[in-house]
Length: 580
Image (tube, rainbow, N blue to C red; front, side, top):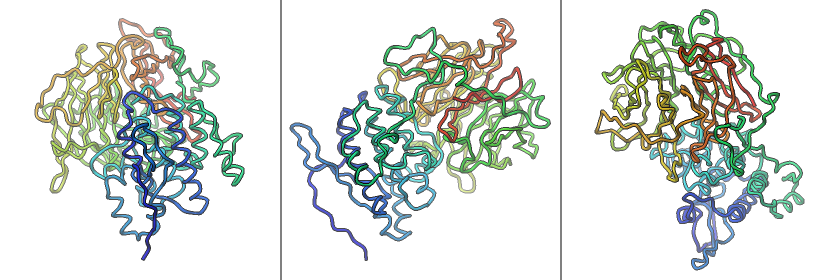
């Protein structure tokens, strides 16, 4: 029988401190963050030097003794429950993983059932740092299974997206800890702590230098170097950058590489590529479920296309994804990935349906509903449940024929899932077809308020980005809502926006315009246009629309940590990539 003997500690846990600290709209003092994280990092590295993995690092396992209420001071952190996962048998560990609190802080590897490692402790420490700086966690839910699936495949919201007071450099440190690939995280907690000090514009704590002198585990000359997290675009002339804003990565075209390395496969060249999805948002490689890096629907001329094209992680020609013909697949325009199952959902404009495909391209289900009016945009809420409505997750579609937005709730059934459709919004119509792209984020700070479960929609007719908070639970009883949503951004440099995606480095919104073929970067938390870059230099005829090239856009990070922006070019009928 294994057991632990520990000191009796009076004070509070880090979880209590995070709950009580006034984080709303403010970053805790840099000195306080650095002091706490330095102590925690040194303890973790000391354990790792002794071949001990914590495996269950979370705020309730970190004690802050000697709490002084009058002056609000906190004592030196103490970490408890070291190695508990290693002491228990596999059945006990599996039972622990079913705990909601544990599921909030486990690493992707542990979510797969693998043993904890040094890198998994770094991931958990990144989650704790995220929570300390924002007051919330990047992944939320009330079911352990849904949370573990988010750790495996969901993209964490950038901390600066939630709290605009957080610097881009600090966001970079946190997001590197949360990389899905363990090799992309910091190798040691002390290395992360040194990078944190640099991001906070503070000197590296002397205790880290002492650790280096004693163990050689921290390279003071280079390990504190952290890549900047600026934007990929040149500053927008219509909205100049204030002195405190993040600068562009580079205005030198030599550092922004365009290469049309993805081309239509055999038999696909006659169809028109619209939207696209990127199942592996952190590295341009195979995802956990999907044997490809990008999936592109071919809506076709007059919305008569019938195919979806998959592209490997290494570029080159595309290959047919849906090799078996299905009458419901007609005019596919958008697709989204179910993070719970790995299945692919596809919105068919002419087919007036939504189809569910297996990762190998076979149709599982075809969903139809009277509220569907030529589905165009499509996005998943990454398994966010609706406890009141009984759903275990949902997808959202935007209808091109009437500019409405519907939510498709997934309810568990006896033999197969049940799909319930509700209309949750109505945007401005623009002629016979109003093309509305959608994306979804766990949380977003707008106009000084923090909102959760936010659906973002392009209101192209009004040059506007609309936001729907509580999107997974709103409209459950009222099935025909005409809500236009909050205005997250409106006006120049948006010019008939048509598609958008999130910048995984900093949480900004990357938008493509129809009327000038520009890529626009928006920081919604500050309601500012950060920059623009032209993706196709063909002039656009403002009367006929001839020359308009852009529709679909997706972003990811390559194996070296560089940002890649993929976009469809209708003028060349290619899928191109801009890499920084």
